[in-house]
Length: 394
Image 1 (tube, one colour):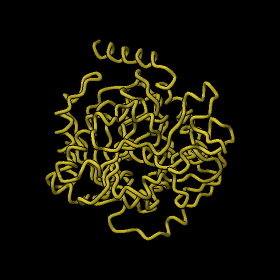
Image 2 (spheres, rainbow, N blue to C red; image 1 turned 135 degrees about the vertical axis):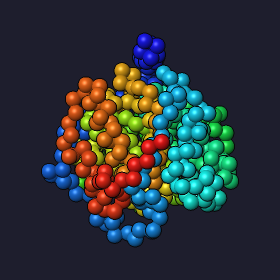
Image 3 (spheres, rainbow, N blue to C red; image 1 turned 30 degrees about the vertical axis):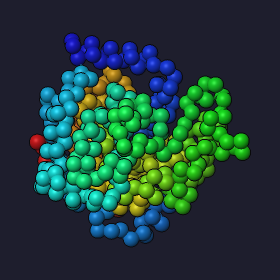
């Protein structure tokens, strides 16, 4: 009963928020429906063949430990929305040390040098309910700083700047650390039709210069022409540019996703980067939905820099995702770690299916919901076959 009261109370808070606080639904549209209907029968052409010709360094994906996934559970980690930071810190340290078979200092040396600029990619959607927990990022930052990285060498980032603030990623909490969105978006303009805050007098998005015109994911799908789309996506057309933060500044990336669904699929490690690193994405959902999660990670800007993936399953969601829905959140009290995001998603997808089934949710196990993982294995980006995954449970 206490758990139910806590969830219903949080749901009321969400309903009381103003339009900006409810912006996740506007941004995400209906990806759960797209996840159900997307099909690879009429494959859209992309520039993946060109990308695959770019030489791959030895430490690139799937990273130092292909196919290894560490999972740690502690039932006392959280209760309702209350998270015990000291337990999260210990869980984080144990998952990393188990993954690397090293102590924290040597684990750091395996992934980073003291000259690196490290970007921590969080997921701020569903602020405070199902977003990346601050306590997980706290533990991560403490590790990096303890091992010699300066705070000004760390960037906490996501695609949208306002979402980071909503989710509590602020300079006050993380002094000396950059908090950066790849772009700005004016959600108030969706109501007021006042575009002056995001559109320049000559008709360009104010965030255009934050994207790298030389590094792009091309797909033979046009972006819509309406102002609302441009406000959210910066560019129209067939090019999705990578943020300059990723291509020009970061030398290493840590990916901190959330344990949640999108229809019968998942919205976890690979999607956090696949759709979070580029602009002009809504056009991609229906024709290419899950494949984007594989192909974007094949680009050197991600493939050669991504060294660690953490899936935050402290408070998880098994239905209604990827947006927040308090009716389907629960205290999973689990952290996952891997260098291989596809092996990680393979394990988490299977666990999500079992959770949904146990809660009476109708499950569709059509191969299209996991084909992007097998696609990644064919491209030598990760391990998808459960029989080849070294799944370590603590």
